[in-house]
Each structure stands twice: as C-alpha cells, then as structure tokens.
Amino acid sequence: MLLELKNISKTYEIPSGEGQAIVLRDISLQVNQGESIAVVGPSGSGKSTLLNIIGALDRPTSGIVTLTGKNLADLEDSELSKIRNQDIGFVFQLHHLLPQCTVLENVLIPTIPLGLNREDENVRIRAKELLEKVGLEKHFYHFPAQLSGGERQRVAVVRALINTPKLILADEPTGSLDRESSENLGQLLLQLNKEEGMALIVVTHSLELARLMDKVYKLRDGKLENS
Image (cartoon, rainbow, N blue to C red; front, top):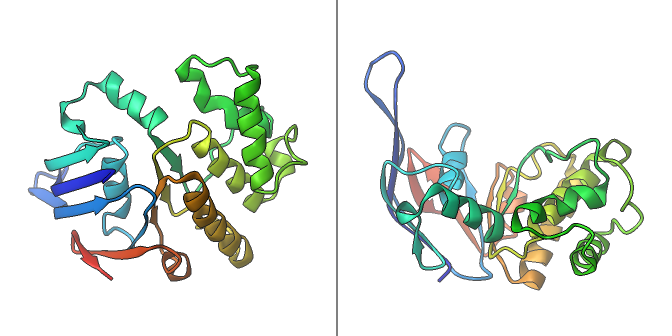
C-alpha cells in the first residue's frame, strides 16, 4: 500500500463568524502502488481540498494521511517539501509552464531542489526520453507560446514525472482542453501510470476520463463513496 487516509475531515472557519464550513467528513481511502483512481463530484464538493491534503499542500482538521509508511502529520515543513518534490508529481488544470523557459528547461525545473545539475547528461536523457514518449521529440527547444494547449499540458505531465515520483495527483488535468485533446491526455496519463509504475489519482468532472481509471469514487456532501 502506498497511500492511506484514515478518517480525514476538513473544516474552515466562516469569516462572518457564523461557525464552520465542513468540507470533508470522515474520509478513509487506501491506494496501492501502480493503481489509478478517479474522484468525481460537483464543483465545491471538496475534490481539490482532498487532493491538496493528499499532496501535503494542506493539513486535515482531523485524521491521518500516511504516504510510503510516513504519517505526514509527524513531519516538519522541510520534510514535507522533500516529499512533495520527490514522491509526488502534480498536474493542474493550468499547465503553469514558465514562458521564458524552453520545453526541456521547464521539465528540468523540479530537479533543481534535489541539487541536480540540469546539465547532467543522465537527467537530460530522462527528460528527453519522457518527452519523446509523449510525442514532443520535436519541441525540446520550443517555448510554451509555440505549443498547443494539449502540448503544453503534456509538458506539464512530463515535468511531474521527471523525479520518478511514486504518486501523481492530477487536478482537472483536461479541464482547459478540447474533447480530442482531453481524450489523448487521459490515455497518456493511464499509459504512463502503467509504464512508470506510479499510482495516479485524478480529480475530474469528466466521466469519460474517470471511466479509464481502475476505481472511481464520488465526493458528495463531504463524503467519499464508491461510484
């Protein structure tokens, strides 16, 4: 087992002083290495909050998140940063590529905190191999503005994979793409999930994308249910 959530709840104080808003209620989940999971649900149901807690970007109000055998609540911020960089890859609805950097440079950015030299040939070879795998072998030295939306999102996927993470978290990764690009990206994520051996959790409104995953869960009224 790679990831386990035990009785996760998340509440926020309402600014007007009218009490608390309950976003997540007593959620438990287990994810095995190499497994693919989709979480669906309406806007505002807490899907992104759940993903942020799994990715150590936010802390639950109560409950335990265990990743690779480590209780995330026991870790200092520096240790959490290391886990986010090495063990988790993030793919968001917007690609967040740096416009002044080439495709290859954007992919190599997550290697900087590891103390790796971006000129190191082994690092560059992995980056190029991953870009070739997603069909971007002709775009190593192009800038994001020279790519289509689907191509930019593929670069973002490769960037998430460069440090060989154990878990990929994708938050509405096809939300800004047309239908064909969405289908292609969904198939690509699943292909890389199998080939790279990492677990994949996708938050999505797309039922077509969700159906590609091993398991589908629905988040409703703060509770996670089998779909």
